[in-house]
Length: 189
Length: 189
DNA sequence: ACGACTTGCAACACTGGTGATGCAAGTCTG
DNA sequence: CAGACTTGCATCACCAGTGTTGCAAGTCGT
Image 1 (cartoon, rainbow over the protein chains, first blue to last red):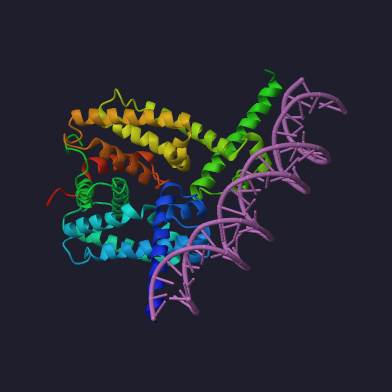
Image 2 (image 1 turned 135 degrees about the vertical axis):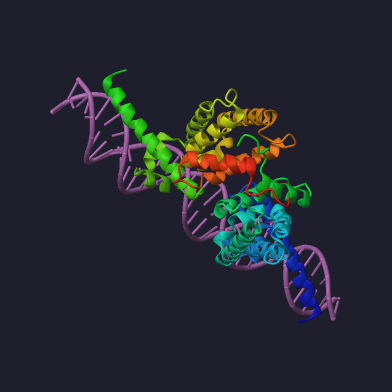
């Protein structure tokens, strides 16, 4: 592989990343946006997008794989199977938020891609195990419905991601706090 | 208004309702579904749909208004400004869930219609006031971020609506319980 | 049976988005 | 500078979905 090739390839890869990021930006506002709009947002011609991605489907697939990788790395980095449940919960939340803030649209439609869907399902199972550990450690109530709890956890992550400009660590604190303590005082229930 | 006219009009209105319900069913699974698919699900020809609704936009608008009315009635019936906060919270939850389970798609895209958007904004404000009353009554913590709390409340409603087959009252209990107490034990936080 | 009305069907024109291609101009490396 | 490569632009064929219309067949009340 010659130096020339490497340089050009790096240019091409930069363009690809620009397109992927533009697609995320545009599609998160309007999931039905045209390739034209995506190309415009990326600062390239529509033909260029088609040269990089054979079809709209291929583009979304590429987005899914890219986001999936970041997602998986975010989870891995939190050591969810070995760290103390509460710590892991917090770390997973903060790390995933960092990804989700930038890849919200993609992460919503990821499951369509079989490869990404598989990883997603895998992560879902790791989340299950983390919640079980949390329950066994007395962090979650013994009678907590873990399916529901997971749903709530996902939903809170989703809502927190709307606060794009806040510090992910602050958001993570709020998410975990809400998940575990709710917003009530405990009186009168 | 003759008897004939009334009978025919009632037939027509039944068809309209069939179409609206079919549209909700189809679009909730696939927001990009074609008029053809909607017509098929309603058991009518595509032309019939177009005779009732001049355009796709008009159809969605009609859905929005219909769902909005149900939504507003669901909130009203809970007396959110007069009932004790905790009771109102529970009633609002149960009533809204009943509507949201059947009109999930429509309620997600309602804001597009100006009329429906206005009602939606209005209900949002009533929710704000209810949360303030709840906080003043000691149901919510004094330091609760009400904007965040409202978001969480909405998100929990959304998640609960996924359990289409459960009893709305049971779901409401779960939602309010999660909103106020969370899923944790309170230990170690 | 008549009249008012609705429906399904077939056909049509139109639009917007998709994907492909050839070509001239540009950039970067060696 | 020469060569490899990429980009923008103009253009094309194509397709799916939309919205319209005319007509024959059907229903329902009187």
